[in-house]
Amino acid sequence: RYGFLGVTSTLLLPLCLLKNLASLAPFSLLGIIGMLYTSLAMTVRYLQGAYLPGGKFFSQTPASLQPNFGSIGAKGALSPSSFILICMLSTAYMAHFNAPKFYTELKNNTLPRFNKVVTTSFGISIAFFVLMAGLGFCTFGSASSGLILNNYSNKDILMAFSRVAVAISIVFSYPLAFSGCRDGVLDLAGVPPEKRNNALLDKVTVTMLSFITFLALKVKDLSFVLSFGGATLGNALIYVYPAIMFRAAVKKMKAETTTTNNQDGEDNPSAIDNESKVSQMVATKSLKREVKFALANAGLGIAMGGIGARMALKSVLGG
Image 1 (cartoon, rainbow, N blue to C red):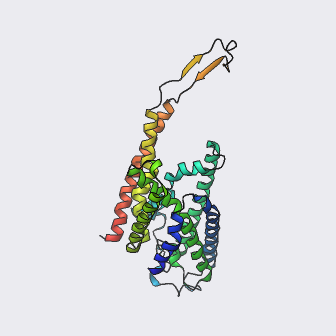
Image 2: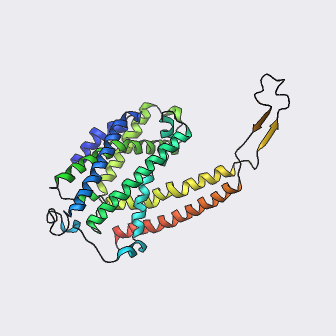
Image 3: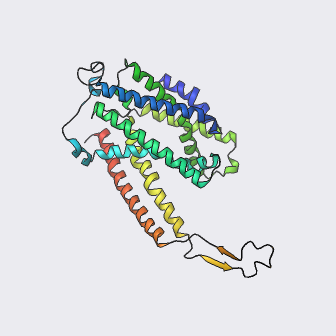
């Protein structure tokens, strides 16, 4: 507890008080390197079979965290409990609210360049999640902890460095998510951007971080936090809100384009072309079909979120 409070007060608080997060870029790179090391270390331990019965670290692992593999096989994916995993995965893509800030701070921030950055980063993230989730499950099976590093022995030096690497990654990526959360709170409170001075931002930061730290000290089950948070907030951010916003945007589009002909373009020095076209966004049939598809996805997200939230609560409360 004291160590956690120490990290919060000496590292997280100063980082969250930063107004320009560009200075965190080198540390974000360090965090990525740390995650690469962790995936490599997990691969090595899996290939070695170091945590299987008779392996080097099997006896040094608590019984509840030792590998446990059943015989259900692929049918397990059809179990309602699999929705807990799906909801956990939803938390991986909850940084949508930071997109405007990333776009604004991106060097040479053209839309094609931003799309390229997003596509590349999402592709790398997906590869990481699939690799590390697969390695963790293939090593420990149903005994996999919500934080997979808990399964590895404290005497495993290779994985001890992984814990340090992951800690660095979490600490220096935390302000990115916190900044978006703080901006959201201020938006809900109706505070206009011009009134968000440094003094106000500092007060809100200290208050929010204190509350979050209090909750972190009370809630011990990380898997429940991930699954329930993914089922509710994650599914809302990924499936529901984008569909609602897209539907509203298409609804505001014009039904047709407006075209004006400029016949005296050659006589008018201010005219650039003989024919100028004033094109407005058009609510085409394909866009309207896409709206229906987006709303169907929203419905699917709500259904998955409902089942996932129920299963997450059931795993904690029992029954």
